[in-house]
Image (cartoon, rainbow, N blue to C red; front, side):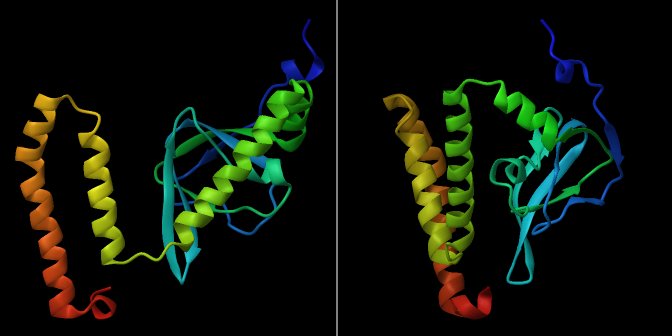
Length: 182
């Protein structure tokens, strides 16, 4: 049996390229399902915009304000013309209320983890050593998933380039000093 909120016609919104859809720090009563287009999710840190992700058709932005009833944790800007389906807080609350208590608890927990992870990434000092460490970790994470033969090929093909990159970063740091280079 259909419930009244299941038959609601959803509001749609057109957003032109380069328009800000959501502003960090503002309180929000709406989330948006991207019907077409692509958006950038970003925060401002130390006077610079730091992109957290890019989202496209089928994905939702602005949902974190629903979960925590607080200010927006990031801004969202249209990277191309976008068609959005507006999801109101009332629609969200009604759907969540109708869901199983376990589902509600999982939504809360996952949302908190996302915010914690974003904060961890944003507060991590970004420097050349971080870049080198990250490159090594990515290489190792890929290598362990390969068969022995693939690992040999991966090592022979990729490792020399990775070592050259790491050496170039060290030379750059030595020549210009990390603070001046960044």
